[in-house]
Amino acid sequence: MKKIHYIFIALACSLFTACMDGDWDEPSYDNGAPFGNNELTEDGLTTIAELKTQFKSVIDGGSYAQITNDVKIKATVTGNDLGGNIYKQLFVEDATGAICIAINQSGLNGFMAEGQEILISLKDLYIGGYGRMAQIGTPYNNNGRMQIGRMAQYVWANHFKVVNPKAELITPQPVDFNTVKDSIDANAGKLVVLKGVTFANANGKKRLVDGVQAGGNYYNQSISGMSNVVVRTSSYADFAAMVMPYDTINKKPIPCDIVGIAGRFNNDWQILIRKTSDISLTK
Image 1 (cartoon, rainbow, N blue to C red):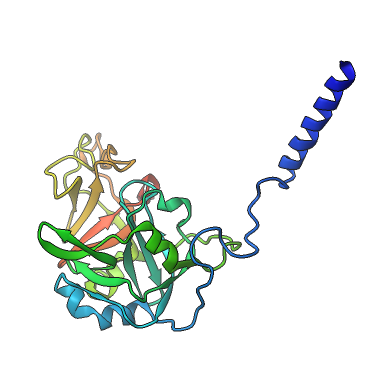
Image 2 (image 1 turned 60 degrees about the horizontal axis):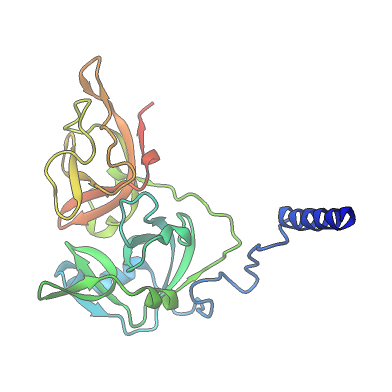
């Protein structure tokens, strides 16, 4: 019996060692990522700016159109559903602009991390606008009105490819909001940082989701001195209960830097914070 017992221990130790050495259940990526469509190639590339210019009338008009040309965009993921504030959407950006990708799937951050470069085949997908925010997806019936909405999970799986699954992710760097705020058509959807700003309604008690509900499960908080800018937060966001920065001793809001996706609704900016660390006190 002792001999059998020792053999079992030796076998268990060898299996444990193999796991620790990375020889067991470790993804290879030799043939591409284990998700998406690895057959896609980079021919027929266009830019996000060119795409938005081509379909400007449907984006501005709140309608949609099918993309019939065999074109693709190559872009970096700058926003996903990691913090619960962006729901069933990705925001991607190239050197020319940014756009929203609507997908009827949760947990997108599990394989679409911030900084991941992806190739998107646009042929047969649809592009449109909701509040003039450019979006790629498929049509849906919104109380009798057809609008651009989320594409099915299996549709998305066939239309994207991870460009280099072995590459180390590079953290996307936000642009200074002050440099882009006057050009909403060109810059909506970009990752931005608002530097040294204060929340207009901060009082040491109010949270990001206090106040009047502003559509769906979202609440808007105004930024002091900015008439057409709000920070938009879902009551389901991980940071929904965060108290807006306030100096209780000197009785005034504390300046902070706010990083987020610069969404839009018509001519108003809606900043979507992605995670708790997107708000930091100004040093």
